[in-house]
Amino acid sequence: MQALQAFQNLLLDPKRVMITGHASPDADALGSALALAAYLDKKGHQVQVISPTDYPQFLHWMHGHQKVLVFNDGNEKKSASIISEADLIFCLDFSSLNRIDKMGALVRDASAIKVVIDHHTGKEDFADYEFWDTKAAATCELLYQLMVDLDDRSLIDKPMAECLYAGIMTDTGSFRHPNTTQHVHEVVADLISLGADTSKVSKLVYDNNSLDRLRFIGFALSERLVVLPKYKTAYFAISAEDLKRFNSRTGDTEGLVNYALSIEGITMAAIIIDRNEGVKMSFRSIGDFAVNELANKHFEGGGHKNAAGGISKLTLEETVDKFLKLLPLYKSQLDKNQIEKEKS
Ligand code: 5GP
Ligand code: MN
Image 1 (cartoon, rainbow, N blue to C red):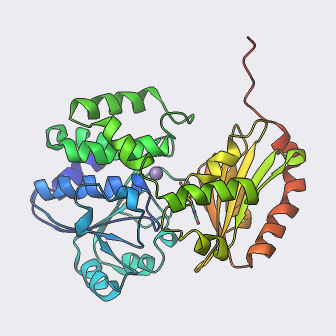
Image 2: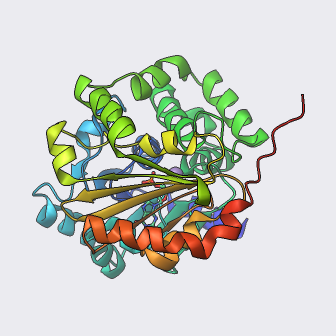
């Protein structure tokens, strides 16, 4: 409570504010950054959102996104001076500085007061204020609650409510994951009363595919999906050539891993993608199988129990090989598929 009071006092006079979400931002990272930017703008602060990297086309409807500075798009110098001159830096939807690539060192060295709003495990100790709750479904849920706790619910307008809704909708898998609590529904109900058009947001995020992307999904499902019933595991390995063949753009592979998880009897799903910057991995699981622990232990990553990611500096083939060699070690845990079918 004391921290909230001190934080509230911090916002009393105009500040130079920099807001960032994690690299390859999703709807929760970008939505929370833009909603917070709009809020602080209304409170009279000078705000700049900087994204470490580009983000998918299906988030371009978000209010204020045109003003986002993309760090690795030739804006390194400009961003560095904004970061060093900021009074306040907000880190949204991540809590360890390696999640913002080269911006991490700049943020660490900055003299600004630093604020983390996040729901990921593996928090680093670098912030002055932390609104951090790993039980929260989304950073957007935490940000909504923070604005309400600061007695500023009335400042949440329709565009902000829609950014917040998008983050909660996607991070809960459209209200299907176990993180979908009563509180999540209550927050969303209030966002609707604040003007969020939920059906519009859902269409903008999910029904905005390019034909290339749909064909790519078809290709990946028929040619690249491997199912290993013995280990209750299914995975995709996607080469740089595959991505090129379907003119893959930022965000085109998002969600693909969930198809693998949707297969009957599967405990863990993975997608392993050969990107320019290295081999990127996404993991998903059901029940008690903790993919963030696997990602952290073997692939320099982390995330949540049922959704995590990591990277590998090996080749695609070597990474797949490493992943496959791990499976026998986890066999007994993978066997414990926790979701029991209801008896009808
Ligand atoms: P996704 O698979 O959708 O990229 O990410 C799933 C979850 O894992 C997200 O919460 C994301 O923040 C986290 N995550 C993804 N990649 C990494 C990574 O390289 N390192 C860490 N620590 N977390 C990651
Ligand atoms: Mn999130």
